[in-house]
Length: 116
Image (cartoon, rainbow, N blue to C red; front, top):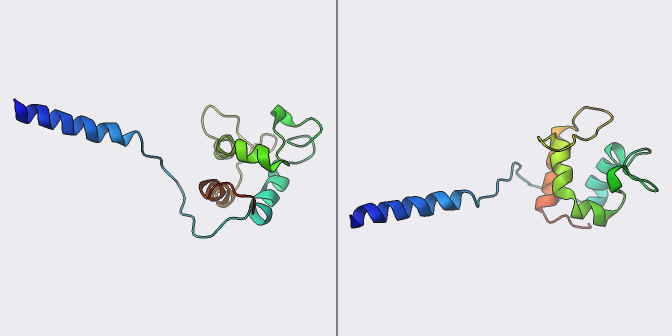
């Protein structure tokens, strides 16, 4: 009986820890720069006339603002990946951004969404 309780406890402990693991889908070998890597990506694909720029940014998201990008980086990443339940971006083009650029954005997020 004690052995059964022990095995159930160990099994429960192992399985309960699995949900806490966060998966990172990229390997980030280089430091990603907001100014050199992320800002140009946004300017070419997101912060364009009629989309996510002032004075009336689509959805209220102004991707010319670093603070707004930092606050919404996880949502942006899901939209770039065309994840289920999120409006895929870029919306007008209907074509996904290149995986290499999405990976670069994800690395920037993983590295702390720095203003560098």
